Length: 85
Image (tube, rainbow, N blue to C red; front, side, top):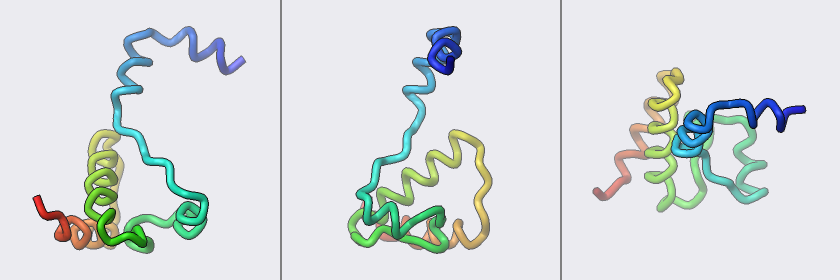
């Protein structure tokens, strides 16, 4: 039934959703440690990935017009400070 519903959506809308930013798939252990925590409570264990994580997280929040807590903003800012470019 769900499949039929998706097929009735305009093709342009489906293409646009595919172009929208998507979340990355994490390893099982990383996903388990993160659970439903946001950036204020969880950071990628690999320091080199924190810049990418913060950029992606911020971009997705912006595109989908999602709110961000002050604690998350502070954590994301800290992670963005690790970016070299």
